[in-house]
Length: 371
Image 1 (cartoon, rainbow, N blue to C red):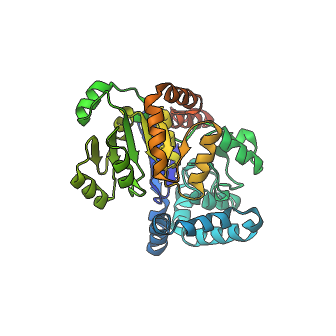
Image 2: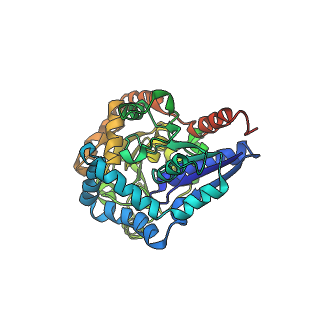
Image 3: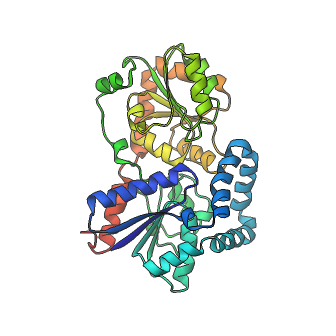
């Protein structure tokens, strides 16, 4: 059996979800021919540059333009225009990917981005391929671009997400509420003592993890300055080298500074709460680790929608002004029972086994072809 796991390298979450599925299939179902494909690698250089860097530049330097674009493309009254236009642009720039699907004819296409299903459903409609198409929605909110009538199954993060799809006319039995696939390391329990020793931090101090994605954007410096005297802070600067140098130069008491990390699960395990951007994958990871979130620097559209979804479950707070943080952190620090109450709510909605459940469901659906 041949399975294509397809993503787009525009935002780290799409890749991480795809990689979690790929790793699960490679490790647990070795006889399956599984391939991990970045659809943008099969497009022309200009389209690839505009798609990935254009998105990054907009959310970092012109979020008001991204908000406008998201609203325009999500507006029901304008879908007759925006949908076909986006579809045309996508088809014209993904001809190589379409040829790959026609030539290879995978049994299953599992996509963690909205662009591949658009191409696959058109090929299915024209009888060019007969693949079963599974779309993994990597946010708790759903933009209309995720919805394609030739999709066989949607995999979603929550009941909140499922209700949106059903309201859009998708049958309930076509929506699998497994969660967003995450790496298995976020599903395990860790001994805090050895971990704290490894990281060089104090186990008994109230600890905050501060991370805002691969670009390290947002008011991180201000937050470190505001909170470092009363709490222990783990700051992940990721690709923001300037921020990394500034914070190291300031040498704040109780602040541990990191660049890119591959042990986010360990940093989450030793933390009492997290201050972060509300990306779909980040939320799924922190829920699996039962970490209480405060959200900052939300991208208009999908991330503000994620906050709305979490709020409906009584989890997560969003701040617009860093001045609000001190009171929030003090409240959690001085009243651990409040943290415990939120963690109980998290336990009710977390779905840490999404990758395993989806892979098992595919194998069952294939009649046991996975072995």
